[in-house]
Length: 127
Ligand code: 5GP
Image (tube, rainbow, N blue to C red):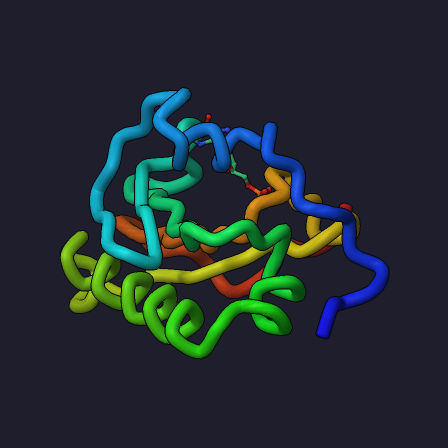
């Protein structure tokens, strides 16, 4: 079932270009379902992005339209990457931005893994 109200997938987005090898990335993990690499503009000592290999705009698109194997494979990769980054003892945060209010910049579903310092509690207060 197609999700309505979402933009179509744009094959020119930067993460699609990374997946095609047109743009380099600092890769930390790759398997059949997922690619993980360091964010180009890190917000914490460890800031890694995990993306599915399929063409999904956002978590709304991914959760509605990806296969069970893609969903399971992706989330297993997220946990595995965090563990391999050595973040389990100290803790980490997983975040995804979806759409306008969340200021999603790149229209290919991804999660951020933040760690390596105390991250504070949830969202900053609106100024
Ligand atoms: P969003 O706001 O969409 O959740 O976050 C997109 C993230 O992608 C940002 O943290 C940004 O720094 C990162 N990013 C944008 N372009 C590139 C790129 O070319 N390479 C890498 N590694 N990260 C990128």
